[in-house]
Amino acid sequence: MQNAPRIELHPISQRVQAHVDGTLIADSTNTLELRERGYPPRHYFPREDVRMDLLSVSETTTYCPFKGHTVYFSLGERQDIAWSYEQPIAGIEAIAGRGAFYKELHE
Image 1 (cartoon, rainbow, N blue to C red):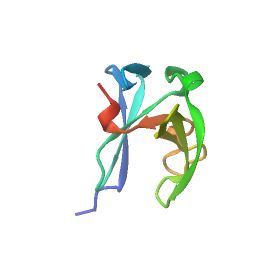
Image 2 (image 1 turned 90 degrees about the vertical axis):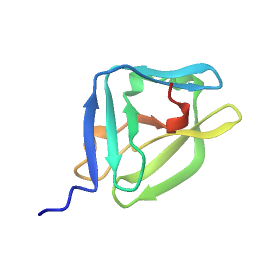
Image 3 (image 1 turned 60 degrees about the vertical axis):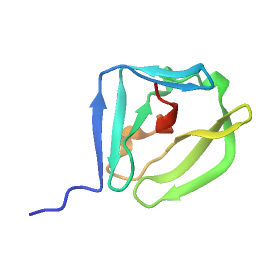
Image 4 (image 1 turned 90 degrees about the horizontal axis):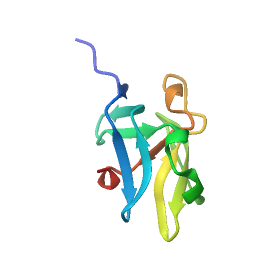
């Protein structure tokens, strides 16, 4: 029996939204749900479905050996509420430039 892949991407056509303090930040029927072993599923929104005009690039950066370098975004005083992999590693290029939010921000 083969081990399941560490990361799986699933296209989601149902409407998914992300709100921060009552403000709609993302609204899409074209997200990619990333499922990674040991972590909750995350929806990656196309940039055009995210209110990028409300977000600013954070100073925070991280590196994931399974996804690549991460850029974070803030909304006013709310730091690092979203992130993106601008150049993800091979195999998950589909998430390039898409924005993800913490699950507790979804409604």
